[in-house]
Length: 415
Image 1 (tube, rainbow, N blue to C red):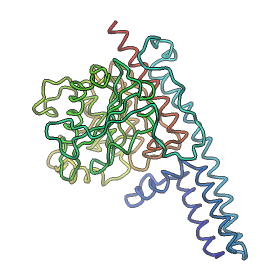
Image 2 (cartoon, helix red, strand yellow; image 1 turned 45 degrees about the vertical axis):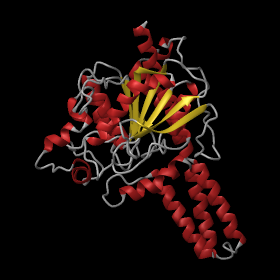
Image 3 (cartoon, rainbow, N blue to C red; image 1 turned 120 degrees about the horizontal axis):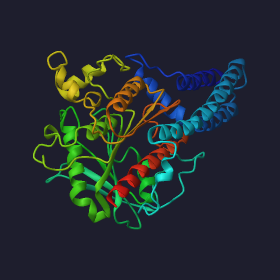
Image 4 (cartoon, helix red, strand yellow; image 1 turned 180 degrees about the vertical axis):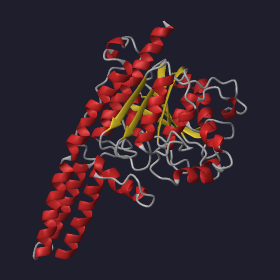
């Protein structure tokens, strides 16, 4: 048992080390590093708690009866100390988000918010230790599931609507696009902290599925997202939503698709059969997306990403049709009339390179006439916001404030 405990302590220490030093440039280790660091970096106190409980059980069965067990305990104590130091790193995200909003919208942006907004004034999420970070249900939110957004909708062409229990007329609308590498994922799995919080405040949030590769080929994923937006335009008033104000968001593949939604409004290539539908969005909030399928600047963490996209998603070869990769890339679709953007990316993302997000923001700011805010979140892995954590709660607060500013400006322009 002492040797078993020593082995378990070493494994725990490796998880802690990976949370501090994730692998960012290795074909074989990127996904394992993400999987190992994702929960560890976001929930360090939970890891200390369960490891301490396991240590008590090991001790009760004789693990500290020999030198290897005591060595294991020493390793665990050092690992727990290092895990504890992740908490102030996570808390630093609060200042990063604040600086990103002031840098993108101006230092006095909150002074310009209208007092007569239909969105309720409610407390922001409490930043605290959550015993169950995977608890998402809110008594103030109702969810209507699996609504088909195209005629004869199949399994994938369905959406869920999150609405405040007390109906709000003229509510702003959020369209959430899930991630999963364009090959997996589900509308019920992602951005739940954000959608529940906004719905509690009076927003209508729509989470949509879309067809997945390899059965689907790009741009079918994007076409489906635009069809979901077309459904919002025609149907969301029945839920109390304002069809003329829709913000789009999403993470990872959803970050790519939400950025493309913001940059390709009205493009007939992506609106077959519904070319006349207005697919403009009020703002785009992509999280940890891939912004250049062509990898023109060589910034992606994995050199094999472009081949994966070409083989599984686009079904084209870069050598034979490089323009297809560029047309499908937000970085190459930037224009002066882009909507306001709030780009959010972790600086420890193993799957989607933060350097690419920086370049995307730089080019947006050079070209777009609208505000561009950027938060580079310290210590954040890919998909950090899927469940409740310190960084998640700070991100939810920041997106709430950004979208409130956009909505307030929209209402003042309508008046």
